[in-house]
Structure formats: C-alpha cells, structure tokens
Length: 89
Picture 1: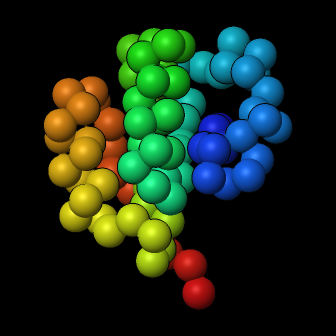
Picture 2 (picture 1 turned 45 degrees about the vertical axis):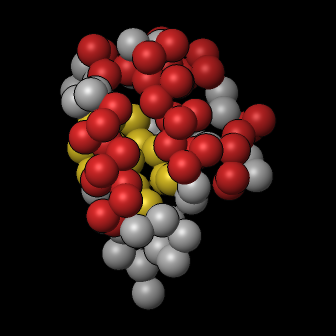
C-alpha cells in the first residue's frame, strides 16, 4: 500500500482505514521527495506502529532526494525501514 507524503500533493487522499485491512505479509511504501516527507513518514510509521506490523519501504523521488541522503536518514531513524529504488523511464 502506498501512503502519499505531503510533497506529493495527495497526502489528504490517504485512506487510513485501509491499514486495518492489510495482512502482515503486505508492504507499506512511502515515496520521499524531501526531508520533510521523510520526517512525516517516520512519524506515521511510529504513530501506527507500521514497522511492527508490515514491511515498510521508502523510495527517493529521482532528482529530489539522493539515495545516499535517504539511506543516511533511514539509518539515523533507528527503524527497520527498507530503502527501495524506483526505476522509471
């Protein structure tokens, strides 16, 4: 399930009750366009205990966040987040 971060312009369209419909084998993905998006994602993971319930993926928006910066943020957050690279044409 994708959870839209604030910089996407679609954050208000997240339908939070869907979290209760997911199975432990499902994944949550955040596409991060800024440090603010990352901080929002971390707060959301903590608020809903997402890392304790699902695999959580974070992907950088190409040309907005470098993979290296996102990897450093993930390590500093101290949460079991997985860095995922998006490959788009």
